[in-house]
Image 1 (spheres, rainbow, N blue to C red):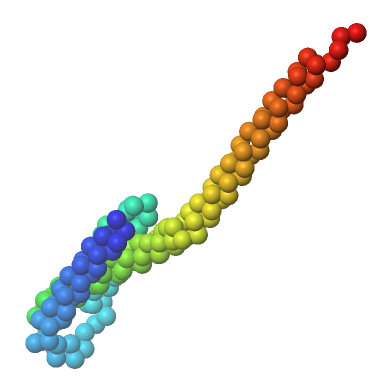
Image 2 (tube, rainbow, N blue to C red):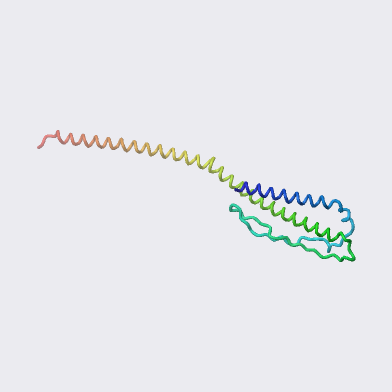
Length: 174
């Protein structure tokens, strides 16, 4: 299950990165406009990434809930017309990057759990189970030896009882 989740997350990461790269490629046409000075207050800034806790196969992982951005509206008379489009593009890029980071964190946590689980499985399959089988074999041998010894003691006791009974019959009565 952990391996399947890692594959799903890898696919999601690849999709987000492809979407990010496609967005960047679309921006190449008007990237030269960013050489003009733009006031910092008109840039889009990441304010906060809200996550909630999710659970996959017993592993607590962060799940993206929302991305809060700071975005000031440009003055339409004093700023170039492309600023609004640039803010939209930056906002989309920031959201994609935040989603990719959360997915990468999920992958890292699940991969760590998979590694730990694999170590435990290997410990039991390669070490503990063979040790137990060997101990069971030794115990079976011991119990077999004890059973054989008990049978032998029983036969000796029976023989002594028979010999004692025979001796009692052959003794002269006084």
